[in-house]
Length: 257
DNA sequence: ATGCCGTGGAAACCACGA
View (cartoon, rainbow, N blue to C red):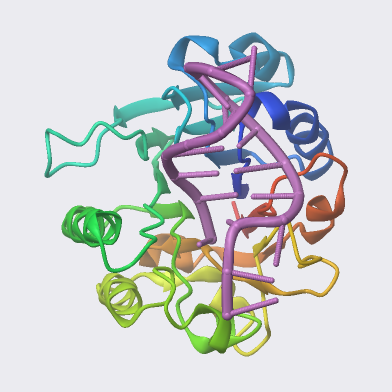
């Protein structure tokens, strides 16, 4: 079974690229972020005609997450991250597909830091870590995937100097991610490629993609029951080179049945 | 070294992304 995550940066603008990628990569499950679309505008029929069941949580202009599943039905567990009833941003979807729990997340960017946006990021992270701990304790097969907006280590960015003061790399951010992983989750891509420079995002400007000036910020964290089924994974890097593409590339893992 | 580009929404500019 192939599971993918892809920050599409706007459903309206990305629909042709999304459909082309789904047709070529054929993930069984795809988690999308940054729909940037109101709930009612989602192209449900188009996605269904492409062969996918879908659950989504939209929001006007910003954020927005979706889970797509080929054939197997999706059961929605929740569309809000527990811990703050005031938080109205669409950044979280938790579903089950078969016996597998899938969490699709779009963690706040947090820039500029310091400031209220960075505070929101760290608070969101704390809430997420608390909930992830509960999920981990369930001893079920769980996948936490999406755009974490976290550069975990110096090996996950093309040049440390350029992100030293960035909310994606500040010590508080990396510590929060490390705390999360320390609950027992496996960083799937890093496990498969222990030392390689693996990127999932490249800026639109400064010719970043062609210079391979990227960073690894989209992640798969696996509970032990999923980790033991992990057989492959990677980044569909060529998608980042397509016309009218997102600034992220899709990331995927393959689990044995 | 820098939102230099891309997107959406409102309104022909601004917010936001990482």
